[in-house]
Each structure stands twice: as structure tokens, then as C-alpha cells.
Length: 298
Image 1: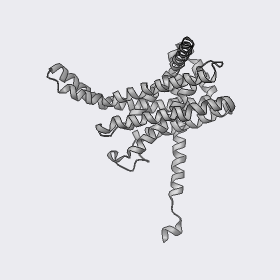
Image 2 (image 1 turned 45 degrees about the vertical axis):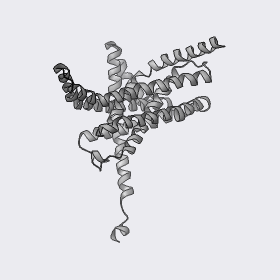
Image 3 (image 1 turned 60 degrees about the vertical axis):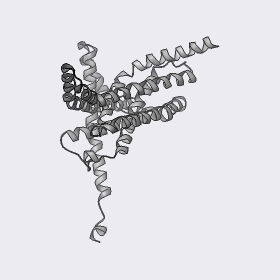
Image 4 (image 1 turned 120 degrees about the horizontal axis):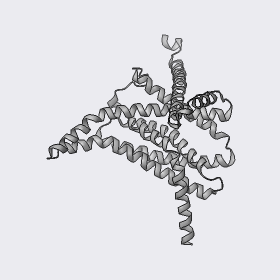
């Protein structure tokens, strides 16, 4: 019996490893997006916030995504593309908001950076993680053998969920504490070590600016690609056909060039869609915040 159990575990781990390889791009996006949520916090609160986001990510995967994905796959697989369209649109919206902030449009930021509500930050990060984690788990689910069996599939998805969460948020925790490591190195008696620490500390603002840009582009790319791909599976193939024509036109340049073109078009599509959603949200917000004339006069 123990031999059989070991064989099952080995099959689950092997399947999880193969499926995880196909989610690498989204995992990198997830790791790039999350550090934005801890910028501006005091050093003492950085790791607790990352921990809370990681716990929320585990909740997303084990309590929401995996059960719903398995149920929908078994009983209503046609619903999944529509859910991914909604999720992708939300990512485009968040990415477009970030781009607008680069140009000074802080329409949602009425409070100072240091006064941000930590609970809102964590909730916002968990909400974004829900979209990215959904894509990770659905890609992994699609990569598993159809005849794998419900319990083997569940085991493989559980392994992937746990491994990806540890990988992403372990990397995020390391990123947000690198400057503290640099400060400790600056206290070292060795001059060379102190210089290394000073360089680490001096480089971190630029590193986080790059991470912010990468995270924003990642949201637009992933969100745009989700919407394009799943629109094609539902009721409109237009954007997907254009994307296919564009990537086919540069296929002579090799897979890297094809990927770059696919990414660029998906990101531009995501930005345009996100800006449209931002405009709609702003318009609705102004309508609902406008006081009736009678109330204003009173």
C-alpha cells in the first residue's frame, strides 16, 4: 500500500511540475505586481502586509478558485471564459489607473501616501491576486491530463497553489527587505562590504520604479490577453484574429519576436480597454455623487 501511495504522490508531483512550467509567465507577473502594494509603508509593516496578502492568496486558491474551477469544469465549462473576461477587464482597469497616475491623474487618491489604509491595501492586493491566481490555476488545470481523475487533479492543483504562493510571496518578501539587508551591510567593519551595502540601498528606489513599471505592464498584458483569448472563445474573434495576423507576419523572426509582438498588442489592447473602463467608472461616480438640486439649495 505504501508503494502505491508513493506512486500516486510521485504522479501528482510530476504532473504539478509540468503544469507549473506553463504558468511561469503569470507567476512572474504576480511577483512584479505585488511589491507596489507595500511601497510607502514603514519597514516594520512591510513583512506583516506581505504575510497577510500571502494568506489571502492561499484563501483565494484553496477556498475560491480550486473548488469553483473543478465544479465549473465538471458542470458548466462554458462559464469559465466569461469569468476570465471579467477578470481580465479588471486587470486592464487597474493597469490603466497606474498609467494615469504616472501622468499626474490621481483621481482615486484623496489621502496622503503615509495615511493609506493598510486594510484597503491588503484587500486591493488580494483582489488583484484573485485574478492572477485564477489564470495560474486555470492554465495548470488545462495542462493536466483529462483522465487524471478528480482526486489526482485536486492533489496536483493543491501542490501548484501552495508552491506558487510560497515562490511569489517569498520573492516579494525578499524584494521589500533588500534595502534593510543593505543597511545592515553598511554597518560591517569591512570597507568593501559597507560599499556594497550602500550601493544596494542607493539602487532600491530605481529597482522599485522598474518593478512598478513591470507590474503595470504585466497587468495590462495579462488582462488584455485574457480578454482577447476568451472573447474569441465566446462571441467575438475580431481582436484575436488581428493578433494572430500580427504574430503570423513576424513569425520569421522567431518565437521571441512573436512573443514580443503578442505581448505588445495585448498590452495596448489592455490599456485602451482599461482607459475606457476608467472613463465609465469616473462618469458613473460623478453621476452618483452629484447632489439633487433641491438638496443643494436646502
